[in-house]
Length: 250
Image 1: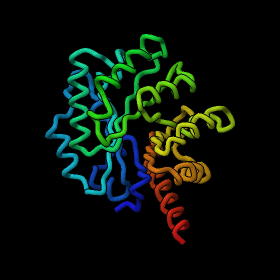
Image 2 (image 1 turned 180 degrees about the vertical axis):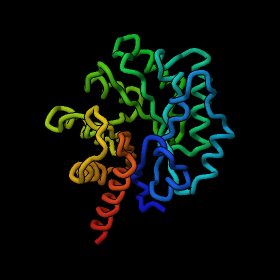
Image 3 (image 1 turned 135 degrees about the vertical axis):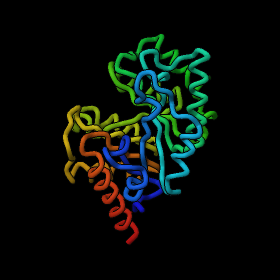
Image 4 (image 1 turned 90 degrees about the vertical axis):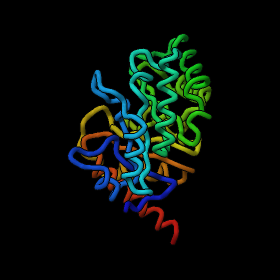
């Protein structure tokens, strides 16, 4: 079983190629499920029975996060119509069945910070994908495109959302570093590590140690790697966190 802390979960965005869940959870504690968001056109979303099977066939120590349905985060992100409400209700139910610790909403870069979009997003999280509907599942927003840091912070606060951050996503000397620290000051953090827009295979030990240092004092954290070398880097990150925990206990 993975040597992980209940406070700090580490894993990959989707299963590594050729690996099943049983093998995966022997080493890592957290898996981000993209089956709702990354479906092929015309295919149906996983039903309740399928989701229950994921939970029942995984060890009790397994933890999940879920990418929200593409119908909720696609070209017409955060719909307020009846279909959108029905899908959001289904998503909340899937999170409950799976025991998901987080659900991630990833609208496209085309979802701009216009007044209309901001109003719709606020209404969506206040009336459709509400905190009460998702219970203990943390609602996470991964913004992209033209959103500026101040606008992201304001929107997240208004909607009661965590913001997915990537400490390695930009030059550490630019303002991104302050933005990441600001988001992590909430005591909980969802880190989705992709790097600086490239397909690098691995991050070095210094970078992984830096991330471990950032999350170690938090109340709770979820660190997902989503790059080409995600599996070995997630293992290395988990070892780093475990080592820090042992050092603190001595």
